[in-house]
Image 1 (cartoon, one colour):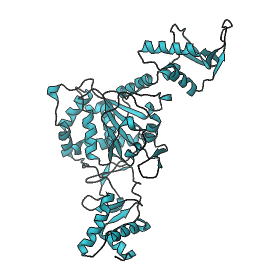
Image 2 (tube, helix red, strand yellow):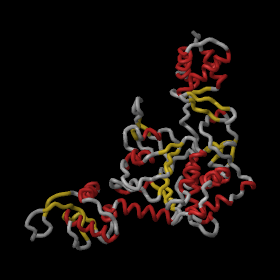
Image 3 (tube, one colour):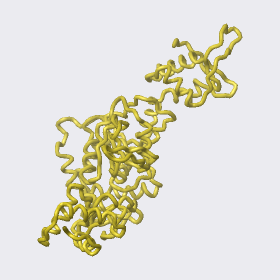
Image 4 (cartoon, one colour):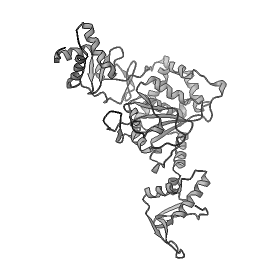
Amino acid sequence: MIKITNDLIKTIVDRLQLKHDGKNIFQYEEDKTRWKKISKDKESMIVADYFDKLKDEFTAEDINRIIKTFKVKRKYFHDFSKVDDTIVPVINGNYDIKTGEIHGRKREDYVVNVLDFQYDNTDKNAGCDIFEQFIRDSLGIPEGKIEDHTAYRRLMEFVGYSVSNLTGAKKMMLLIGPPHTGKSVIVHLLSRVREDTSICNFKRIGQRFYSSIIDGAGLVLNDELPVTGLTELDTLKKLISGDANTLEKKRQDVKVSKEKHKFLMAGNQMPGLAEPDHGHAFAERLSVVCFADEGLAEEKRNRNMESELFEHRDYIFTTALKYLRKFYENNQIFCEDKAGDAMLNAYKTSNNTAEAFLNDPDWVELGDDYRVYSTDIYAAYKEYCEEGLYTAEKKDVFLSVLANKHFRRSKFRIDKDDKNKRWGYYGLKLVRETTGVT
């Protein structure tokens, strides 16, 4: 049995360059100037290899005792979750978002995840024809400078934000357009340069244990947005904005997390909802880039586009970091883009037609002295949806929106000719006469 002393622990730590965060062990890699998180099944192997080289006899119990002793030593502790979010670690150093400069990386920077590209601001990295053509095809930019198009600028801000440690935008980034417009290429490219990514199935996000799979992920990706049936909007909003959210892993204690998660998703259309988005709270957490109106013809598609762009990743991501600086200087607000913003506004209306109807002065007027019968206002709402070619909510869902907006429900008579009191709401009246039947 090995005698465990402070000197022995120090010798092992110094030789193997180890730190811990109370649960996990990290080892410094000189060649990559980063700290690597050691998986649980390999912790014992690292310490055992150390004694093997010394040809010392040891047991599995000795190794476990050493690891347990090491993990409670405060002097070897470091909180690796605390990072300088204005630093972007790349292969050739740390890119400083505030200054736009690259600096050498030191052991004491405690960087864990290094992006797989180099920041290259030299003349030899001044352009990339294949990437420019990809952007033209993907965003539908036939001529002119791509930099003059706000969709391109917003997309590059998305890309820069996705590889950074910034989380201040509190937005889910959506790439929306027809098939074969290059959306998945962007998603896969990001997954190749950033290690700490996770794939999220939106339809399962509220299931027990599922939301915990994104715990600790620097970026959550998916190139298959659900067309219908998206639920658990409250959970999604909490994950995006960093509000307190319960994460539960199997055989582990439940924990409450306030970590902000970055989502970048791609789809042929905006995600369909299976529940009302009250006050557009979920939609307000989205930012959209619209891709071209139609995909590339079969004969024009490059099956190797992702791999070819990956070869030019230094240029692509160096460019993205420049746009990231502008985004950062704009208080982490994505630049305006008329097409993307128009799509989001249309999405708000289509997802919450009840809200849109109640806010439309051509249909509804608000006032403390106003009243309206439930059947009449629902009939008017259905006419509103028919005129706008929207899908009307069921009556109980529509009335729940009125309740959530705190309109008081009661029985009353509006006209003296009414024989009986009817259910209705105080605080609003119809501007237009209804002809529909509920």
